[in-house]
Length: 197
Image (tube, rainbow, N blue to C red; front, side):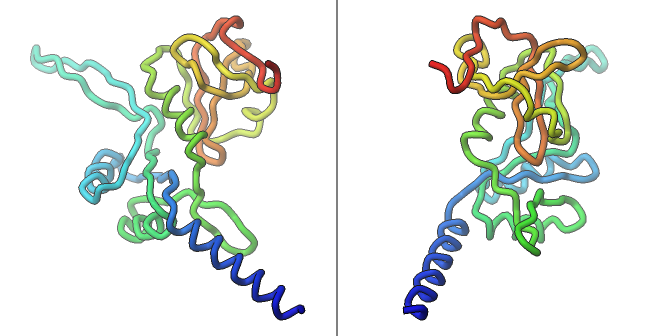
């Protein structure tokens, strides 16, 4: 009986590993030498979906106005792939990037970001709203406070925690273990506590 349960446990473990390695997830990269757009172009040529939280700025040189994309969190980019492909990306760009990882037992595994968390982050960071603050690291204080959902306005559908930042109540959306963004002011009427109907 013990042998059968051991085999079932091993088979279950194997199936879990296959599922984890064949399904696509979002991953984060710390990119060195301000090469986020260069790495983005290479990954896009390999048909890998990427996301860089950016803002557009208008620059004028010699009387010519030009829109430029500027990363709002220096050296940070996201890409969507399988775990195996994420490890290949890390090897492909050795000394140019670091793949965000998590500790599991004695191993460091790539940090897979849940789609829901990433979709909320992309909704907020791509809104073009002024007055947002970006934090290059996730801080435990961003997880303390009232959890809310935005039910109206530009950020409708976003979920996060209400935190006090510089004496103002702000909605903070995090990608756990990677970064956070604090929105500009959102009227109280647009917020719904999570867990309440």
